[in-house]
Structure formats: structure tokens, C-alpha cells
Length: 283
Image (cartoon, rainbow, N blue to C red; front, top):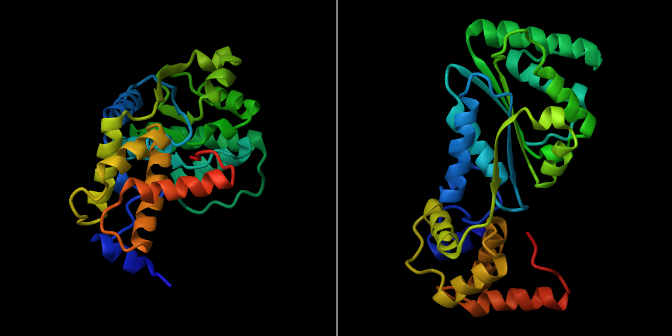
């Protein structure tokens, strides 16, 4: 039975390089991803920008980019809330935001929306505005929010009389968000900046693989043979999650065969298994 430590030692690594994780350690600053981060960080530093929108196809790195945005905008003048899952009812979403700001383990006796909205307004005024801060709420997987929750989210930006309400929501999710927001013009028109993440080109895909390997330890030079790199890009189409998944599977297959470099045959065996099961290339 192979142990994970044996596999890592075989490649000279301390950590698994291609796990599906949002840890900043694995962030690869491709031009595409850095543009997204810079534009959204700029948005979150504006005085009157109630909404931003970051979308991308499945597996293109939205959640990791959202994590990096939250990390880069956090400073003494900004209170950043990053919610990795937005599949809440609206009252529960309000309660989650409030509890993160006041940070004293509030027990809500009721999830009454009116009560929670008043509490949210009070927290925004006393804990954010009075301290000359700005609240940034990053809502990942925002496509899971109902249309009604999105509408009520917009209404929160009407709470103050001040035109520069110290509040920004950054919606992060699948491209379907564009269609859903278009059906709510009152919200769509309040989105100050938008960015859509696409797949990587071949050069960036190769650079991502090397970045992940270097972040995980001290891998041997040219661990992936040229033929394997070409095939990895072909089957992944530059989608980072697919790319990392197939790289991981190919490395594991090479390890079980006692190889010290990963060639195309290691990946071809994996693809042949999936074809036998009639499985499409998956993110």
C-alpha cells in the first residue's frame, strides 16, 4: 500500500502540488488573474462603488482570485468579509455578516428580516462608518443566491442618506450571473466594475504547473516531459482545475510505475480509463 509521504518523497516534494484548494500559497499570478485582482482591488478602494462582479467559467480560478482580492484589500481602514458560500437565505446572510463584524457570538433569537436589517444598519453605522472604515463583503458562489436575495442585497445599499455609503459587495460566480443581473436593471446598473476570467493559454498553463510544483517543494527539473505538457494543455483546454487534476493523476500513475519523469503515456492511460467509462473531461 502506497503512503502519501512515499509519493511526495519520490518527487522531492513536501506538499501535494495539484490539490484543489483556495490557499493563497498556490495562487499563480497569470496576467489574466492579476488583471482581475487589480481591477477588483481598485473597485473596493473607491468611496462610492456599491457592487463589483467577477465571473468565470467552472474551474478558471474565481474562488482563489476572490481570496486574493480579500487578502490584498484588507487594511486598517477596511473590514473584509469573505463568504466562500452564498447559499444562504437572505436573513441568514445578514446574520452571518453581522456576527463577523461584531465578533461576539451573538445568538439571534429570530431571523426576522426587519430586525436583522435594522441590526445591519446599526452595525454599519457604529462599527464601520463611525470608525471611518469601509466594509467589503465578498460573496463567492453568488449564482446560488436567489433572485429575491439579490434584490434585497441591492436594497441594503439604500440604507444611508450619505452618497458614499461605506459598503461594497463583490459578487463572484458563474457566467449565468450576467443573465440574472440583466433581469434586475436596478441592481445591474449599480455594478461599478466587471471582470470575466477565461482559461490560460499554453505558455501560462505550463507556468502554472511549474509554479505549483515549486510551491510544493524541490521537484526535479523537467518533471513533465514535453509530450505530456502538450497533452495536458490539450485535454484541459487551459482550465486550471482540469489542468491540475490531470497533472496530479499523471504524476500518481508515473509513481506507481516507478518512473521519475512523467511522460504522455502516464496521462494517456488515465484518459483511456475515462473513455472506457464514457466520461467527459471533467473540471
